[in-house]
Length: 74
Image (cartoon, helix red, strand yellow):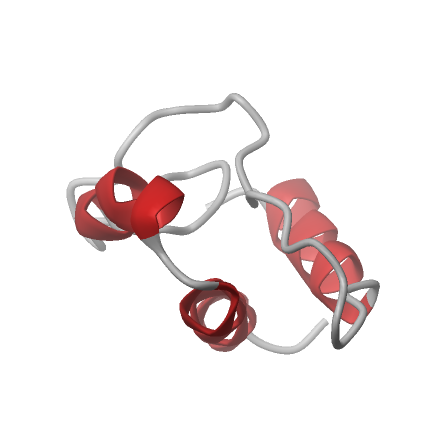
């Protein structure tokens, strides 16, 4: 996994405001790591990517929380 992408996920997650628009974590590096099943750019699973547009803001925030866990500490 890319250390730059991991830091970008951490930074963008930290900038999310509680009641604001929830942006997609996509950074247009769309390749699934066969070992983890996560996109190497945004760390989402294929199921999360496919469901994103239909998710509520709460569900999107939960995905962001999971992404921060996946990338781990700085």
